[in-house]
Image 1: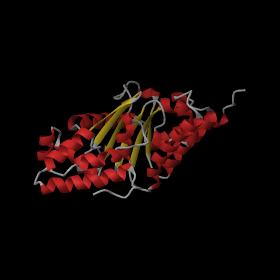
Image 2: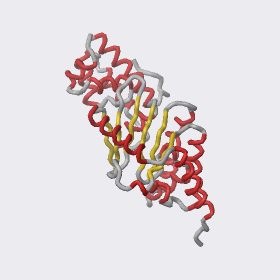
Image 3: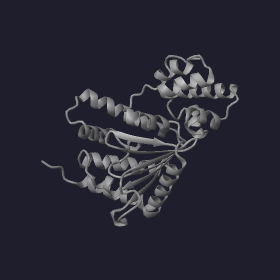
Image 4: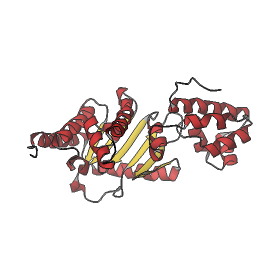
Length: 279
């Protein structure tokens, strides 16, 4: 079946995932058994059913063949895979929207879910200095739309470890930084996010090579995501997810407590607020 035309892609994927589950059960196959036919893990099948993973075009064709679904998946998955986010990040952003818990380490900048409009504008202008204002406005709007998942007072659990470098690098100028850090501190005070700062004094740490994000779901296995310039890798491999989870645990242990982190956020924000603007 197809859904209403106004469904967003992530909602459409959840609907298609439900259809996949029904088709698999009609074929009397477990997730593991179907995964073996498709040369993927059973957990990957579970994530397609939950809508946390895209059903790519070649996979859709194979599903139709194995489950005898008359081309349903090939017809419907292209529309479900459309996204306003870049290809290397789209699947992670859409999984993020239905996660029950998100744990992330941010190495160099305040992560997207915690950014203010002015901070996001400065970041995108730095990424694309020749882009027209309309392009930047669209990117900022999409980033702020992602952050609306924090409008829910309890879900998802958001736990962020911020490297001190993200506090000290002046993005957009002192006024923008003061606002950005006050925003992060406000989320922590409202108990909407757990925030820790990994101080420079911690020295070498478990994620020197860059950021990492972990996501948990109600009815699907956890995922981890690592990214770099114009690239990203989302994985459900249990060994990789376990290794990244251990890495995050080490970062938590090395970071300041939430209370001391909040005090540092306030202090650095005040320093920015009192900084004299350059002429």
